[in-house]
Length: 170
Ligand code: PNS
Image 1 (cartoon, rainbow, N blue to C red):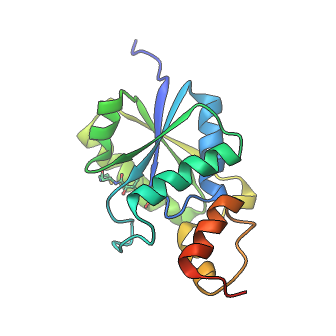
Image 2 (cartoon, rainbow, N blue to C red):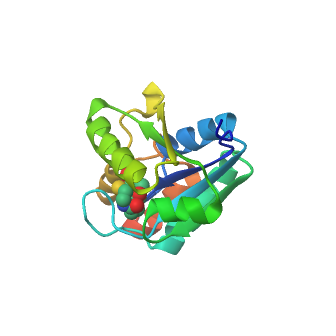
């Protein structure tokens, strides 16, 4: 029998990290011994550039995890293929959150692609908690750019970075 999976990667663009992402990471820590948050250098799913640099996104993820008391999680940037990163760090699986049905098609496609590239790598999905079901980084960026309150969607440390980026318009 194959060895149990102990180390998983939670990948994403994290532009910026939200309470929805943090919920997925927290739950991954309950399921697996070792969790690495992998921050993708490349563009997000809509093919657009990011609002925050890779370093900023990594730093925000680290700060946010600490601020939420989520301990023992590594945060690392990665460039190129996710399967190559997983191999590099010795992770046996990828954990992602599924929000609404609209996530499903996209995630299924990615999981299928990753399986073709690396058949041993397992894709594991956790269902988003209802309170985080409709949070996305793009909504957070849009609200911030329009000067709206985002304290229900991201931790205060991330909100401070958003204010720096988009200015105080309240
Ligand atoms: O936060 P996102 O935008 O949903 O994250 C998507 C991400 C970064 C996990 C995905 O685009 C990814 O794995 N990118 C790395 C490149 C890669 O491996 N592509 C092939 C699998 S789709």
